[in-house]
Amino acid sequence: MIETEVVVTIDGRPRPAVVVERKDERTLVRFRDAGGFRQQWVPTADVVAVEGATTRRHLLKPVGLAVLLLLGLALVLYPGGSNKRLAETTPTASAASSPSPSPRATATASTTKAVRAVLFGDSFVSGRALERGKPTAVQVAAKLLGWDATILGGDGTAFTTGGSRGGSPYGVRLRREIKTAPDILLLQGGASDTNATPEQLTAAAGGALDWLARHYPSTRVVMLGPIAMEQPQDGQLVRVDGTLRKVAAAHQVRYIDPIALHWITAANFSGLISSSGFYPNAAGHAYLGHKLAEALGTA
Image 1 (tube, rainbow, N blue to C red):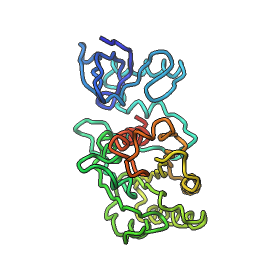
Image 2: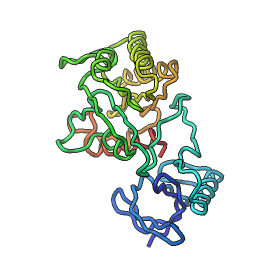
Image 3: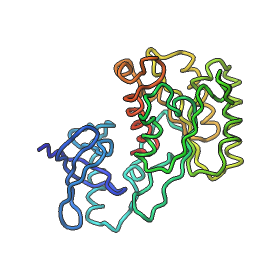
């Protein structure tokens, strides 16, 4: 029996618990509930270990660990308190994110309406080169977050081009494909914008954000930059990433930057990239889906 002390999110609330068993992507934890103890399997990504100063996802300062434990204890002793996720009470700063607040997973209570999300982008969203029947990264993320998601992917499309397969640039696609205002719109792309100048990309991406702001002012827009699956990173892709980050900041839209966050590295890319190169394989989509859910929900 492992009996590792952790903080885990259960029903949208952080709780102090111990790890009983780990198996693949799931962890069996035991925690106090309604005057007794309860065991439950949870996604391993939702478990924050408090051994030493490290966790599965972050390096936390000892003071931060103490805050997490005290918060979890308070929620156990006072179950009528806040139902907000741990992320909402312990925000973290990221140099790769803009000042806008990040979307978060809603509580799983039956009275809470699921977040309506549109996950919009290029072949990363559509799952090009992925084995049939395997979930894409955005599908994995949406499931982890409990979102009611609509997936809108267009192979080869981008802010400045419709690609070589007869598609349309994002400005056209958004007008044609978005019919109602979602709660959250993830705007992913940039991989096919490498032939555009920074000025062209700035105008096209800025125009797309302006259109969304005018027509769907209540929708929270989050941009997801390109993912450099091949290592070393393509210099043109890094340039596109930098341009899109500036556009997002200028429009006060949160920007998730997989390149700056080092989601793909020289150490891990070989097991995550498809045999054709450039695109993630099934393991890559699963891995990136967890990373994306963590970034979107600060889970």
